[in-house]
Image (cartoon, one colour):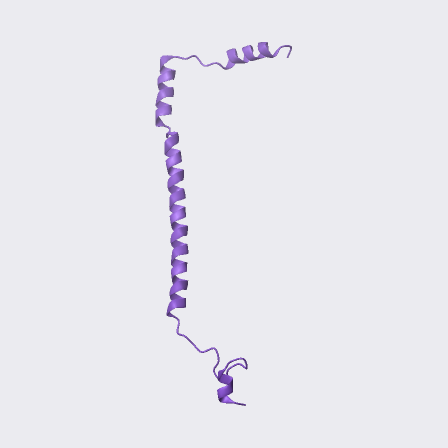
Length: 95
């Protein structure tokens, strides 16, 4: 390959497609059938919105369940048989 410009010229001559009206019409039909870039972006954004909504719903339900469990749980005493030694109720019971 003595010269890059010569090589590129030869390759262009060998690989060029004649631009006829039929070829251009077929190319226009093919491009019209392809989805637009905005459709790709819209689809990606819709998926992202659905994923975020699902995660938010999951977190919301789990947080409300834990809140309801804590709020509606029955209170139970911290001691059953005898209070701790630091408690003032220990003086009432005696040893």
